[in-house]
Length: 487
Ligand code: LFR
Image (cartoon, rainbow, N blue to C red; front, side, top):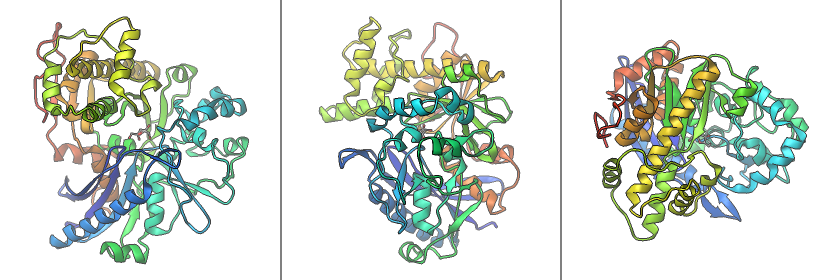
């Protein structure tokens, strides 16, 4: 199998990429062959994803992957797809997508929350699904749909898989974010579908990471230059599930932060925690690769920062991120904090103003310079991480010594150091491309190139990268720009 390569399609809320992954002698190498922007668009009276454009980029990326593999004398063994969770496209019997999928940042589902909770008590929902309450969970989005007869809902990675193979499946890690999935049984909670008057077969049957979805449709093979025998293999199609699978943890008890648009902060468990205390703290029990439980909370993420940059750019102010972070790092600790988890920050609209308003509500004032906003965001995220890790330890009754930060935020040295300071724990930062690595490794295991459980997959990640380490500063915190990292 020395020449096997795998293609990972990894699409986040702000960008997507197609990556070629090799696993040779216990080490993984990634090569990005195509990158493209993503973002919500105002379309047909709502915030939606321009799915046709995304799918065209996927095909362009797969064609680039086929070319890059051929140039190395290799062929692509399989394709794995991961994206953000929760959102879906509706497909009719003929297999056509009936509308561009809504984004979870559209606020239409908020109005449906009360209606759903009248039919299904939130305590009952939690006792079965173990899902944190977020106003955009699939269950609330579906409750806004007027016509579902004859339609099927395909979660975004499943929709891409369907268009590539003609096979309709729902991958289990992503199914666990719908609010319609039984966390203990690992099956659809069909009683909730019927309680809401939703068709029983609204979602296609479940498929587990590592199982084959199908092979490429002939027209897709022709358009991409891949052979029609190329498989699409289910991976942790929820991006966070793939990212957690690639956390380079050495021991069992560790905390992780999958840091991108969101920060997903928590621990890995073998069984869900469905207690009332867990519900009160709004912890989620999402499914991980190999039936693990991702016990975590959605804490605000770098969305707060990227939205500020977008607003500032609209005003003609385009500072380099490195400069802003340096200026923020030079500010003293102890500045004002916001609650980065507040749903107030979900929608895309003037973020700097919203942050200033949130700070004013705490009785403090942010000085004018954008560095103060940046520092406030990062301090608030770090405080949120510390609080969340402490809650996870308490609720799941375990203790952790290290915090692994993976994803884009692992390159933000200030954020990593502030996290070490706020948690009092050692932070191990990287890999940046954990999601794509998790995607590739599950494919490599399905192909027999690696074997074992998550422990073995994580050993491959450790052998493949050089993480940066941050130790908690003695208080008062000295310069937060201490060690390692790229930024
Ligand atoms: C991260 C993520 C989170 C999910 C959010 C919305 O990219 O997948 O895990 O809560 O996006 O789908």
